[in-house]
Every structure is written in C-alpha cells, then in structure tokens.
Length: 440
Ligand code: PHE
Image 1 (cartoon, rainbow, N blue to C red):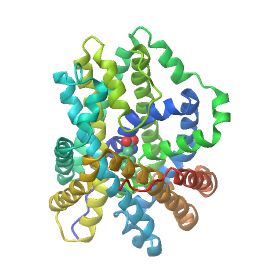
Image 2: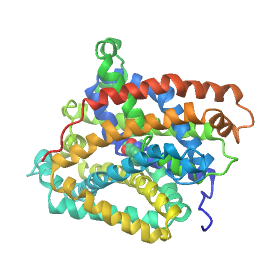
Image 3: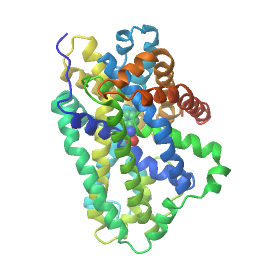
C-alpha cells in the first residue's frame, strides 16, 4: 500500500474537524432545537452535554483513529478486535446514508444564495411558498448534483491538498461572517427579546420537561460534534503520535459550541425583531423563517446572500467529512485511486439522494433514521468499545503526546464507562420512539 496521507499541520487537523462539526447542525438545527425545547433552558443543558458527554465521546473516536492509523472499519483489525468491526461499519454506513440527503439540503442552500441575490422570495411567492416550490423536484435534484460535485472535487484532491486547504479557508470565513451578522443583528430594534429568549434559563422548563429536553440536548451534542459517523475516527487516523488529543478535542468542542451559540445570536434577534414565529420546526424552518426576516429588512438581499453563503460553506465543510469517511475506507482497502473513488462514491450518493430531492417526506425519513437510530447506535458502540474493550490501551493512547495527564486520562476512561455510556444508551432508547416507517 502506498504511504497513507497525513495532515500537514496541527491547525489543519483542528480546522478540518471544526469544519466537519460546524454545519447545518449549528446554524439550522441548533437554534430550532433551542426554540422547541424552551430556549435558554435547552442551551444550558446542551452546554453541559457537550462537556460531560460530547467531549469524552469525541476523544474516544480520536483514540480509535489515531491508535489504528487507518480507516474506521479496518481500524478494528489493526486493534486486534476484528469482531468489533461492525461498530466501524455502522459508522461508515451512517455517514454514507446521511451524505445522500445532506447534499440535497446543501442544494437548497445554493438555491437560497441565488434566490436572495435575485430577490426570488421577496415578493410573490413569499418565503413560505418559495420553500415549497424549490425543496423537491428536478431543480432540487440538479442542485443536489452540484453540491455533491463540489464535495467530490475537494475530497478527490486529497487530505492535505483538498480537505485541509479548503477548510483552512472555510472555517475562518464562517466565523468572520457570522460575527458580522451577529453584530448587525444586535443593532435591530426589538431584537432584545430574542436575547432574552436565548439567554435566560428557566429551570422550571428543564425540570418539567426533563425527559425530552435532556435527550434532545445529548443528541444535539453528538450530532453537532459529528460523532457516530466515524468522521472523527477517520480524521484522527491521519494524525501523528505527538499530537495532544485532549487539547485538540477541547479546542474543537469549544470552537463548535462557540459557532452554535453565535448562530443563536444571529437567528433569535433577527426573528424577534421581525416578529417571525420561532416555534415552528421541520426541515424548512430556517429557510422559511430566516428568509421571512430578510424580506422586510433594509439590504435584505445582501443579508440573505451573506447568511445563506455562510450556511453553504458550513454545509460543504461537513459534507467533505462525510464523504471522506467512505473514501478513506475504499482507498485503504482497494486498489482504486482517490479521485476515482471520490467520483464513484459521489455518483452512488447522488443516486441515493434522488428520493430525498424528489419528495420532502423521504428527506425527513432519511434524517430521522440517521439521527434517531444510526448515530446513537454507532456512538454507543464506540463508547462501549473504547471504555470497556480497549480500556487500558485507550488510556495509553490518549496519553501519547500529552507528557503525563495520568489522572485526567483515568477520569476520562471512567466517564466513558459510566456516565457517557448511560447517557448515550438512554438517548438511543428515547430517540427510537421518534422512528417512523418510510413514507411509501
Ligand atoms: N456536525 C455536523 C453539523 O453540525 C453534522 C455532521 C454530522 C457532519 C456528522 C458530518 C458528520 O451539521
């Protein structure tokens, strides 16, 4: 086998991981999960979930990837635990599955960048009808194709020349543009209520809705850190042994949370200032409600291009990671070149996404299966594997490159074995109730 690729720099690895983590989940899913689950109460539980559950689980994926230095499936052979390969395979399958419809949503975002520039939803049809018009059908299939093609192009260029270079440009752009939008949103009269909604925790809400708020927050923490899709296993497999996984993990989790919170600082003042309902959820929520806010604002078209532009970059840098999981497996194990693999898999994914691009109901179903079943199941497998099967080896691996950290590593292992395991298992059980039959 040819030499395996690696990241050129530590920052490159961090930004690529942040690029994966920061996606539609932060800008679209997070604000609406917050809105549905009691505003600031949800934010508080989410922050706790990131630290107590998300961070240890992120480090668990890192440990598998770096120890094995190979894709997420073959990793289990390298670790001499071939029977556990199913865990890696489930993650790869989850990534593949998710990428098919993620790309359709990516296509919608492309549509909104242009639609904002031309003012397509500013008159007749208004934002709500516009979403209905563009979400499904041949146009959606075409833009799904475009989004997939760009993702394939970046992944085909390789880990260093494609993913690392692209995300080095994309992640700073996301932050700069989001800070700009948040600063703008702060100037809107009437936005104050939005901050209040987002930032004043109501303990009563958490207590009263404990069994819905907590799993929603844990699920969001896992999804938003790209866990359960073998992304972080794959990305860490391109790392050297001198890297400090602990500090990298903390930076990535902090950065990701920062962007999620920043998205709240953009979306909530905007919606409250414009008097747009925050409660509606559903796949189209951000598109319809945020677009509605732009309709009546001065320079709404420019704002729309900037906002949806950020969403597009964020979605792309996540899509890259989803495709890379599968490409990495094929390139490691079969004699196909990286570009050919990326194109071939991209073609299969394009076809797999056509039902989601043709019918909204299919997209919703694919999403539910990914987030309510595949993700928590794969994450549970990873946490159990690292905590109870790798055990001492995991502690050994996480300590590499830290120059000590003995106590912290053992605390980490025990947190995986207990709190994290129970929380992820609980999330899985509760989220299974959200599963539904395919919309045939
Ligand atoms: N973390 C991404 C987001 O917040 C979603 C994602 C999950 C991307 C898994 C890649 C892999 O949108």
